[in-house]
Image (cartoon, rainbow, N blue to C red; front, side, top):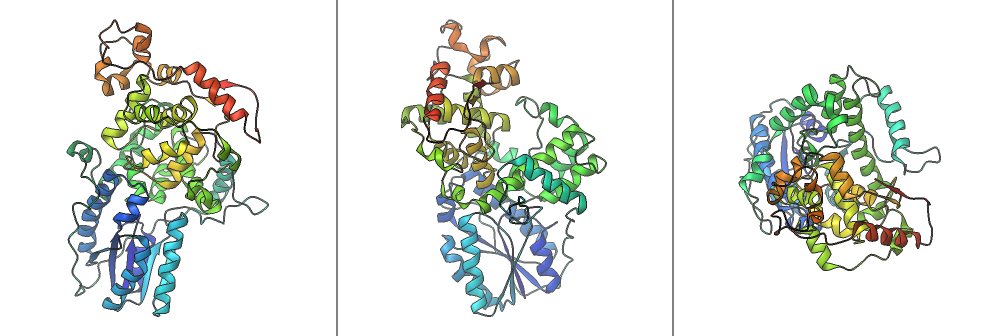
Length: 481
């Protein structure tokens, strides 16, 4: 009997470990509930709920293949080795199969499980699955991990041209076993159930993930490059939550994008090329997790930025978290996050720069808050994005590059459609007034909307001064967008 331990790979199709297990004999699947670990990792309640709903769908599709799905609890990952050993003994398991996960805690957990099972004579097999390339195989000429995305991407392109990662066939139906699937819990203690409206935005299951991918690559991908920065437009794929939970694979996404672009990586539709780049950014940040483990430990990628004099400003932080900064594009973006579990990517950068530059609040506060609310929360991508925006990370924005929320708002939401949707109290303002109601002096019926909590110009100078005072200064000059 074979056992597949499911983690962030909640799908039947193109699942490397599942296919490998099923090819070797009768297979049982297990998923471990780890509420204490999830709390420690700041996983959002809406994300935990999404996992459970996807497990419910997966249990049904695996059931059609006669592969039972068991649910066990290892409150903390430290308990995973004992829990899996117990199950392996009960079922007389010959081998455990997993798809690789990355990050310090994940690697440590898997090594401990492998050691425990091998002591019992049970094989442990791990497979490359959520990435195109195994970390450690895409390296610079001096055999180090890349720090600059454009160089990393170039090597990835060369290798993809030579050899495309193939899709893995779903397992065939197996003979019935005497193991019965467990019911999937509808909630986990410590994680509140999200609103029905949020759940409705993110239906579970591979069929929905595939529908989104097909809809995007059939029609929208052509406009992705030109429309992805405009939050009021449906310019993005809306697949991030499904990728983070592994309900769809990066390989499936890459194949679909190439199919829509006549097999071209770097020419053809600009939208397809840009979207493939985004898949490679996702890859890049996961390689960074392995190559530079300090980013898994809440450390800055650029060590010299650990000396930054961040402000301890709990009231400013609360205003940012609660969408009452007095800057409409920031507040609208934060309301989108709080109500949907998701935020448009351009706005993730805008609100992150506002917190870390204009408010000079430590990026880790923002990273944590995002993880506690994102349905697509992923350590590598979230950490990478926050460190890029705060100029502490790999390939990051130069410290003097500070997005101005007002000009970003005017540029990417020029009609104020996104702001009106999320801040209905400002709906009466015209498209010039809506970006900066403070200019109106409260005369236009927006008395219940707060004044800006910070002066953009003086706070920008404060941020520049803080970065210039670092021991190792990296650049000079000033840029403002």
